[in-house]
Image: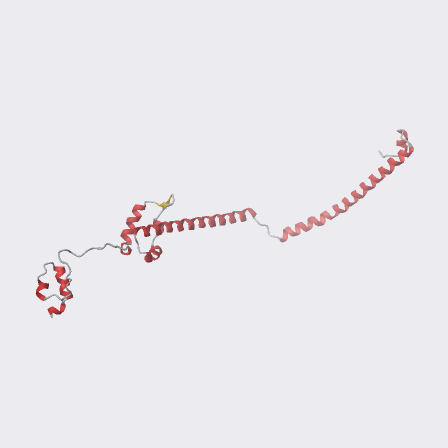
Length: 194
């Protein structure tokens, strides 16, 4: 049903008001017509855009995004595990190195020992080497040659060293009862036996 002057006059609206209503209505209708034309124009472009999208899809190989995600996630998890393992190995090596120092291993030999030690046999629990007493015993057994012993022993009281500075005679040497001391005296005074 269209809005007409005759209809508005039948409603009892004054003629000057009727003109205003018709004019406003005409402006609204013209705006709607213009908007409808723009929409028709845009809608006519849709088939061309759909074809362009299909062409782009055909040109791009289809990717399995889920598989790619799973692959990247597995790679990341592997890297994360590798870093965690490396940190654990470094901590284990640090603790073992500290234990070598505590055992008295010569500082110059520690790096060499670290290179040849099988660290897989050592486990760490709560920030310390598990079963540390057994590991200490193994260190003493395997690397005992590298542990410096600094025991100072005095001279044997049975055979005190001579302070005379003079050479011993053959008879004095032969009078020494201790065999090892006698052999040492012979070695020191070999000219007496030639």
